[in-house]
Image (tube, rainbow, N blue to C red):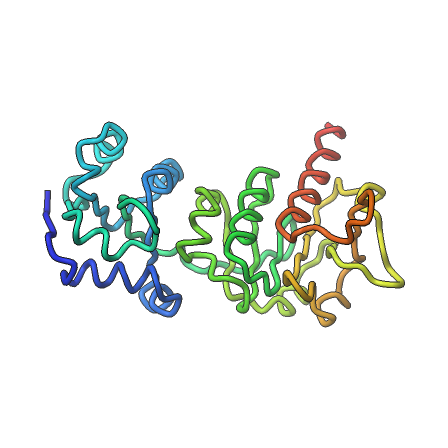
Amino acid sequence: MKHITSAQNEQLKHLAKLLSQAKARREHGQTVLEGAHLLQAYLQSGGVPEQVYIPESKAAQAETSALTAQLPADVLTLVSSAASAKITSLTEAEEIMTLIALPQPSALPQTGDCVVLERVQDPGNVGTILRSAAAAGVDEIVLSADSADVWSPKVLRAGMGAHFLLRLHARADVLQWRAGYTGSVWATALTDDNNHSLYALDLRGAAAWVFGNEGSGVSEALLSGVEGSVKIPMAGATESLNVAMAATVCLFEQMRQRLEAV
């Protein structure tokens, strides 16, 4: 196995740049997975890593051995603890770091179920929505250019492997997407003249869900092109839900209706 002992190593500098800069991820078409769980999820999806960097402190662990047994020797590199600790974006222990190529862009979905994120900027919210979408059987995700970078370390960690179960359309022009999409489109936004209770909707047919910015919601330009704005009934004085929680409620209500219809 190859061995790196210095944080000044060019490969580690490259990893550090990918971990910290969205621009570098886009320019190189690569990102870094931190931790054994994400590597395992990537392998289970059929992904082939470009390189896997293993901290010396993790090398003898059973979990690490089980992962490395699935990989060819030429993609494995051992990294000294001191070098590894200097470049990880995690605040605590060193982790296995996996260099992967980003998937090639594909055409925006024109039919079928999808989730559209417009200016959703919190990485935790984006990652949680990805997990909920994957769990609810919706595998097309469109993200506007001003949403959080879907391949950032924080979104990857929050997604817990959901990235590898989905088709992600990053940095999309969401108005262009809407112009070409032929199905029903629902947005979680309250308007004076067009509110629909989530539980009164028929969600058995293919549809797109639009979720907007944490503070300002869905833009007027995109909202004007949806079938309706959806409200989630709530008890008490609560006015709204966190966008990730709202998305989860909507997607699982959609799945519930479809399961009942089977």
